[in-house]
Figure 1: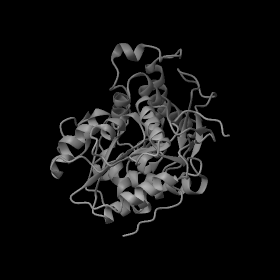
Figure 2: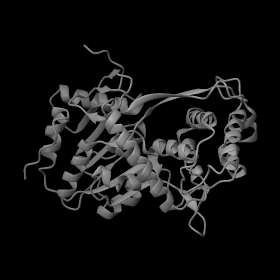
Figure 3: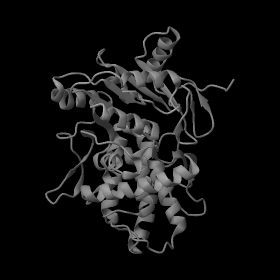
Length: 393
């Protein structure tokens, strides 16, 4: 069976993957990270922004204030955010001031209604400071804390409601990304609005779609009888909605292992993390998901292929030498462990060894792969095959 992948793959990767797909497979499986591996852009951040924009919450102002503070001690709340003169509590009170206005005006609710928006300046304030808060949680508490924090706004929603919201937000974001590409956006809260923290700014890549080159690879693998699994530090319904979104053309996955909140007896999420049924799928937790929850289904064999884009994926990429292909997506990120693995891949290529470690670059602005190991990021900067910044020759 001859398999031909698109010309947007780096030639070495294209040849290696096409040869890989000619092999015989018997009760084998592969594991993919989702965000910025299968997708270009982040599914959970995209949903977080979409939920903020739609005010798709089922929370009173008192409940909303409580979930904002869940990751913080009282002493931390009163402390200044590093590098800023205002405290965490100052920032949260600014957010809550806006939320109370929306709530009293009937603009908050799920299902989302297209209410008249009479508070545009407060909406700008709310979105900018919610994003700023999430960035600071990730920077100064931990990535794991940010993964939990991003779930708390789902409180009182059911799994099917989060799933439906995610599909709607992702489809809308994908349509815009196909038209405009993935853009680097600066969100700034208005200086004209009196507040405790004042004006803040946060910048991020905005856009979300699924790489059609990865989608094609996944379809080919599924056709060859390889079972597919996704392990992600995003939320369960968010990932399931993306994997099953008809806009993205992905084949069926046998399972996904993710972060998730706990439901109550009526099936509505509560602001508490489900560590029993959903171990934290970050770093070593991703490897644990393979070893304890997937491999036993396959006589404890390692996956035939593992794909990822960050340090969090390195443990599952490197734990077993029998993994035939390790596919790394270069999105220009600074990741110490992944950088070493990428350098090993480049050394493997320089020495003309059989391809095992693959680095694939992408054109982030166009939201697609390109036939290089370098990455062109959303600010039109070039990053080498190991992720380091590189000036174009």
